[in-house]
Length: 133
Image 1 (cartoon, rainbow, N blue to C red):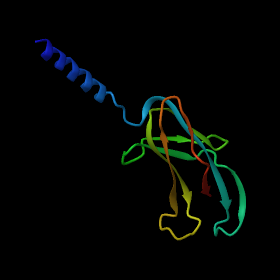
Image 2: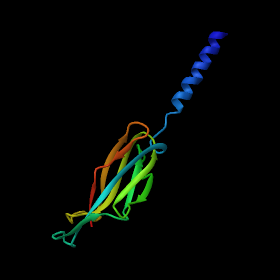
Image 3: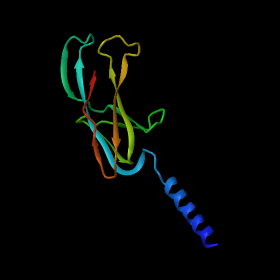
Image 4: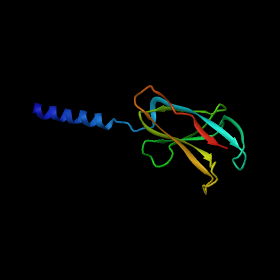
């Protein structure tokens, strides 16, 4: 009887331990942050008018293997964005930029960065993301 009880308790403990594994996303205490830099050109992309922080840009994040964006925020007046309260896992960050080659039919394309949070209480910095305006 004691052996059966021990096996049952062990089974319950292992089941709870495995079911507590959290997927990437909200609910943690880490953050992902970065900056967007805009390169402003004329319509033909032959003359650079200026380089500055890309303010009020939509910034998207995909949690793990999700098929579409999980959250969208806007960059600050300094071009900075931050996704707070993230759990450990893999993330994809992206913003949209004009096509400087003038070859893409959609005229816009995503600028993508992939990052990983390995542990709790991490501040993961994404390299500057360059977009064209």
